[in-house]
Image (tube, rainbow, N blue to C red; front, side):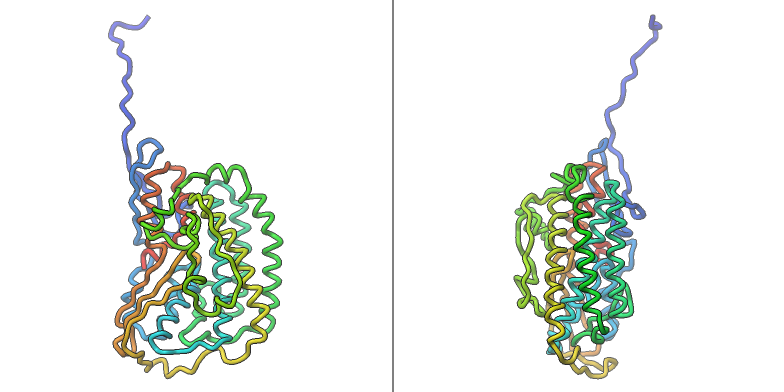
Length: 380
């Protein structure tokens, strides 16, 4: 029998609470954090909290000589540094009226597409690790390392290449490099079925990613989404095709799109882009030996190089999305103003906050990796 003073325990309603996701967390891309307000496992509000990485790039660039910034810009996005070099160099070339030799343009395309493959392999690993598929992560990172070996052979550096400079590239390719690149592409293609079986067609992956972090086409346009994230929502815009630069008009490639706009669609667009980058690189390998000439145009003494007054905006298609540099010159030896319009600023803040507010605790890491943001570029 129950005692006379028995009173049933009344459980309080579920309370909201705050949780810090990051900055040192395996489910975060780099040193980044998200302050999340939860009710149970459901996210009520998410606030991006950056600032844990190197900052102030744009103001530092305004205090350095034009040529010195070549060493700084790759650090704005560590996983995909080559588009930073290309975009800054193109802005300087537009201001200075520099014409890049044909051979240098083909080499630049090669570097850009190699960097795109590396960045996507890195992202596949991150997506896989968020749901426990660490084997796929190890495969992606190890394959990326083989591309870094070639970068090191070409530039002397594995990550920050400082190879694309205003007017061309620093030096020509080492002998036999194109043959080694062709062999590596064959190796990558031979491994793609393993990635497919383990990860992309895995029922667990498909169930977890389908409907997670969905962005409609209308939302993508309203929020300023670009790159693979935009194309995953069904909008086939690619700067390489729609505002072409270098020798991209001479190359054959498709712009992969999906229509669902969720984490799975974003991942599948990037998988298709790896195949397109392989196709582009094979065309470069076939054409480049027949293109002779210098790899950079003559430049004045870089320590006394005054760029004519003016302003310009250059943009490229990075693996993360549309990247732009707005540069202003007053005719001196340094830029007067520099502004970077990077895709990660939008994807890792405004878009991420909106998508997380619709999701659950276990979806936070997967949504962030599916957007493929780059925290250094946010903190720039």
